[in-house]
Amino acid sequence: MISPTITKQKESFNRKLIDSKYISGAKRRAMNYGVTFDETITRKLVFEKDNGQCYLCKIETHLENSKDSYQPKLSTVDHIIPISKGGPHTWENVRNCCLKCNITKHDRIY
Image (cartoon, rainbow, N blue to C red):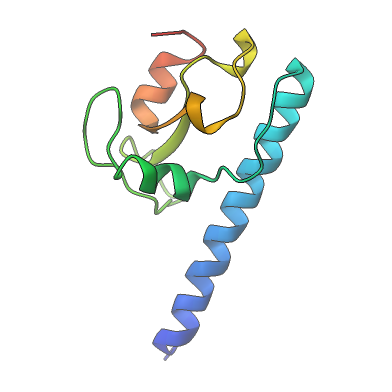
């Protein structure tokens, strides 16, 4: 049986890994489009800033990611003005968004 301490350490490691993958992908896109990039922004911090609520449909999102299936309520970082449209990766331009809304919004400006 795995101890609760090991389970918590594993969960923490997985979250850090997910955040580091997110940061490297966002940084690469920001560099490609020549926009400002703030390295302090993580999916978890954006989730906390917006109290876990999707800014588009107002549902409660979650941070846990399961590789088994599509999870429409998964928390994602959305850029109000997309990076591809010249929007910076800064605190003023990021919001918490559920995966379903983020996929639907794509690179549009609402």
